[in-house]
Length: 114
Length: 114
Image 1 (cartoon, rainbow over the protein chains, first blue to last red):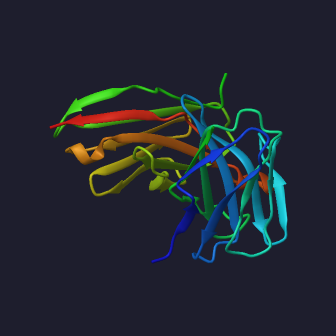
Image 2: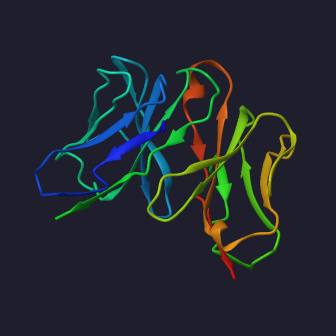
C-alpha cells in the first residue's frame, strides 16, 4: 500500500541533544512538508521541499534542519537550538511541487523532553 | 484578524444527528479548500477537496464553499460514533509560488455519543 511512514512514533530528547525524525513516502510525490502541531495552535509549517535537493523555510524554521537527498525521504532534525521542541510532528507530501493537489499526511511523531 | 477562524468546540452530538462544521477566512486569494479528519494521536486524513463555490458531496459528507462570504462548511449526515475526531479546515491560494502553503484552522473537536 502507498503511504507516508513516520518513525519513530514516540521520541524523547535530552537537553542539548539533536534528534532526527524520519519521513518516507512511496507515493512518488514531488513535494514534502514538515509541520508542528501544538494543542490550541493548529498546524504550523516548519520546512518544505518541492523537489529533490531543494528546500525552503516555513513559518517556524528556527532550531530545525532538513535534507532532501532522495525523492522519497525528507528527514527533520530538531537541534538543541530549538528550546521548546515538545510537540506532535507531522510529515506530509503531495503530487507536483507547484500543483494544487492536496497534501496527505503521515501518522506523526510525538517528541518529548526528558 | 486571523487568516482562518474555526470554532474549536468541543461539539457533542447524539448519534444520527446532522453535524455542521464551519470556517471563515479573510484572504480572498484562497481558492482551494480542504477538510481533514484527525483521530487522536494520528495524522490528518483528507476528507474533502473543493475548488469552486457550491456543494460537493461524498457519502455522508457534504462540503460547501461560499467565496462571496469567505465561508466554508462541512456537513455530516447520520453521524456515527466513529466520526468522533478533530476536523481541520485548510485552504490555499492558486497563484504563483505561494500555492505550496496550506493555511489551517485550529480544528473543531467533535464527539458523537451513541
